[in-house]
Length: 554
Ligand code: PEP
Ligand code: MG
Image 1: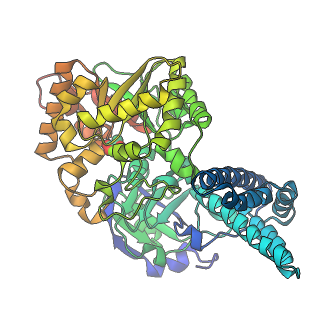
Image 2 (image 1 turned 90 degrees about the vertical axis):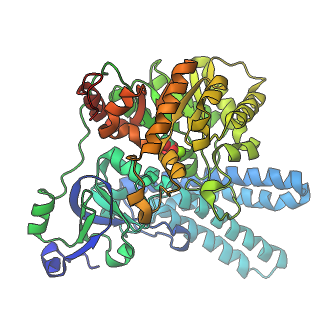
């Protein structure tokens, strides 16, 4: 698509597509293409000014992470295979940590305006070529170490990088003021993007309760999915209209079309004004990364009801150390100034794979090695997180929530594993709770709450498993909705189990953020919800205008 192409030039070929609405609202703006196939398509672009500062920072961080990962590999190989075999990784590590290499990469960024990937390739390719040319078998062999070191740094960069396909930095800026067009929205992308300023989403695949759809609703921007082939029909900079109510997407919309659908072009997303807590409903915040705590506090959240701790690990592309976890978790605890914080243990698997942990291919990943099962199978991954949480608990009471629990025994097994990993640490008040998102666990809510300190209902997965309907599949999105009696019967039973046991209950799935259900939840005794931060004011407003008890729910 040529840059000079304008809306007027394209008016004649306005193209209408019908997809699945994921998030309400309407916007007309330019496209930013998001490329998930990043390993096969490295972005090479020119930078200057603040772009160069950012790229040097990315390169520096990638070098540090690649070196840390290599050390992990070296230790594993040394233990599993032997010290001699581990030596090869020492050589690569020395290359990556060489200050001369570091300086050369930074110089290519600052002097030549190359992005981090381009600079890493240029410098390491040059070293490799020079060594390969030397007429000495030993030195030639060393050349391949440079190639391997380069791939390791690029791998890290691939996981850190905003995977934008648009050429030229000024064009996309991590989706700022753009409609993101992608195959599907993944949890990692939600961190890569400048989410504060994204205007909307249009994707080829993805269901109404995929993480991308949740993000779009949280941001209050329109989103439509179920648009196969969309990425072939638009380029970066293409004008596109996204109507999240009807599911219509229009490529190169005419002025009059924009006026009819959206009234305004590229309106911009406004942060809603905070609303004070209301009687009868406690509204907490769902957060993805530690930085989100500031917005939660600004929105007067009455606590963090769900901290999806896996998101920043997935985005970083590596496991955090105990210290790194603890630093983040303490920041959130302090940011909430004494209000409760619920840390969900890593919820890995299915739609949230860890890029650095090999999960063998599964026919049914959503029924496979995920959530609690994954944590029970990988005590090494549980350990650092559990120990960090135990350390943080010395600064204030914390809630630790276990994902995808199927029954009381599984919960007890995972809680015991947590305790075993942290036994030697001094710790404060830790409450152990359960995500109720598997139907069997909801049916056993009483037995689980006899054992656990609290529970929170995850309706996003609960609907998926209760009705056997994939939350991520746009083709079955029409069947994925909360207006189904079995769900409400189950929610009623869980609320009754909480009342009977006296154990606190909240609801942190998207049903809690949908104001059509606020009154109904309150009527059935679910009086704590946790929602995406920006939706707190709307949920409080709905609770405040709830009909008096006994009247028909909204
Ligand atoms: C849920 O399943 O409802 C939930 C809150 O967790 P997630 O969306 O992260 O699976
Ligand atoms: Mg879930």
